[in-house]
Amino acid sequence: MNKKLMAVAVAGVLTAPAAFAQSSNVQLYGRANLGIDSYKAEGSSVAGADRDQRIRIFDNSSRVGLRGTEELGGGLKAIFQIETGVNIDAGGNLGQNGTVNASSGFWATRDSYAGLEGGWGRVTFGRQSIFWANGLNGQFAANYVNTEIPWQNGTGLGRMGSTVARVPNTLAYTSPTFAGFNGTFSYSPNAQEAIQNVGASIDTDGHIWGLTLRGTWGQFYGQYDYVKAESATNLATNLQRKVTGHKLGASWGYMPGARVGATYVMIRDDLNPTVSTAVNQKAKQNGWTLFWEHTFGQFQLLAEYGQTDDMDDCGVAPIVSCANSASKGYMVGGRYFLSKRTWLYLTYNQISNESNQFSDYFGASITSTQSFGTAGPVPYGADPKILALGFFHTF
Image 1: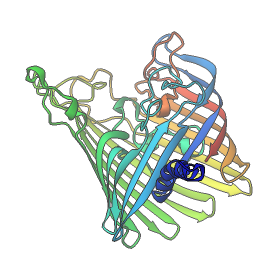
Image 2: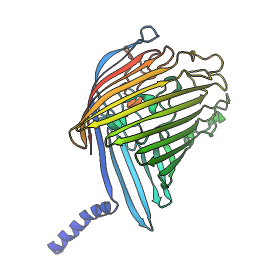
Image 3: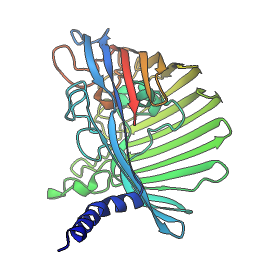
Image 4: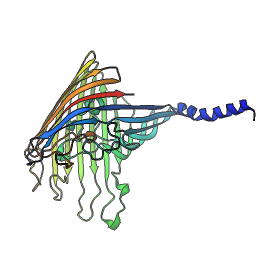
């Protein structure tokens, strides 16, 4: 074969995959968020259970992702995203407390989906967030710095446990935007597809329903989230855990790089195992958070303050009393921008738990184990504190 023709043929084979990739508009993106911090949780109402101060090199929600679209004609397009959490500090999928961080270490551990989008909205299937993301409200956490008041997203109320966050096997429909409003409806079978029903001991009736409504009016932003999560019924006891959450937030961006706002969250948990194992046992808790950010040139100041009420509707014979189960928390910090995509940050976070509560910083498994090596929730009454210096880069 003519050498020139051979060269042209080889070049065509090698460039064809690149051409297809370009036509589908694939983007590589990600972030690195690492630093050094000091963590402790002292003042526990349980003798000898304090978590002594320790110095850590931490990673919070670093990630790598691929996303893209393909125009299909007639205003219709295919969309996809595959986002994976990576622990740059140590590799693997373990958080700071040595337990598994379900959002890192494997492909598609973070929000990942594929679907279709058009003038009618979009439909996606995959591992997707329900209830806990806040839009423009309270972006601190792993989007700006290392962590924040945990109940702002509805998942850090301590004994009330988590509602839902990033949920596998989720179907989501997001509407078009009308007059500044849009919404997302989500459904997941809540792991019932994995139930083999051996001996008919567990039903296949688990599911999660979620709804998020968003609105933007000039510099104002509002968001309402609802979730109802029901586990599979244990047919031997006829017990089914049901968790319902409501979250409402609003904020005002009063100048570029400056925003002030508030969020309110209410979680109701039927059959909460930290309250009681009694049939039809219920518990409920409310919380709220105020947040503020303001930019001065290359500096941005950040602040949060929040409280949760005592748990109530705890029913008969709780394992631990629902009295004295409130928490208070605050965060102060700042960012220094080296560029639009790179910054340094310094933050201080503290939660004050009453004697029958153990709210802590749960995101990315960032809380540490007890001094004698036992993982799990911070001890009752202990007050977790984190002083952190971090580096953040997006690409």
